Image 1 (tube, rainbow, N blue to C red):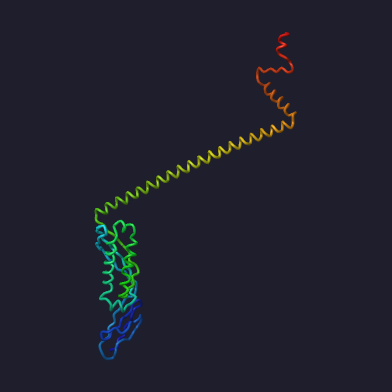
Image 2 (cartoon, helix red, strand yellow):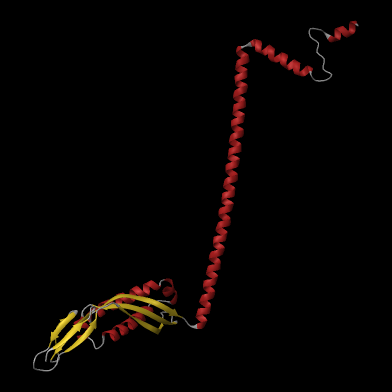
Length: 257
């Protein structure tokens, strides 16, 4: 008996005649069957990317801590024939394989190791199940850890540890800021002192150079020496109670008087 069947985009139809798989039907309209004989059957296989959640898997870590794990696995059927013929239900099989892979991995890791790198768990599970999944026509795209749930007392302890770590980190940042400020202040003071010392040294050097230039000038011009002497006498004469005796022997004059 002839039958017309339409396969939607994103699906493949597996055609069974007399109980045997005869061919795969791509998306589109197909006329299948014979004029005489039993009606053929078509099993649809979804080829689109899908995901399944493995919830609340209670697993013991290597250090005997009980944790509950939820995983999100994304996959796609890439070999429809293998997906239908090699296992009873490929989705159930994938679910079981992910459970076992998670248990195998967590049994070799301590709680501290798991907390430090959750990505390692995801990558390990994907690597573990990818090979076996290919045997029943499924390609695993991702295996992400959604949640890790710990016992109540352990959660409280971890919250306190996290809070302590955050406070320690804040204190470290504050201490570093104070140290940076102190270092900048010390650096600024040192730079100011260096500039002041350099300026004083430059001024002293310039004064020495001026004194030396004046001495050289006076040595070359003796008449300037006399001018400088007269200027000195003039300045001294401005002071009160100052007397000058030029060319007179004061003691002899007083005696004669």
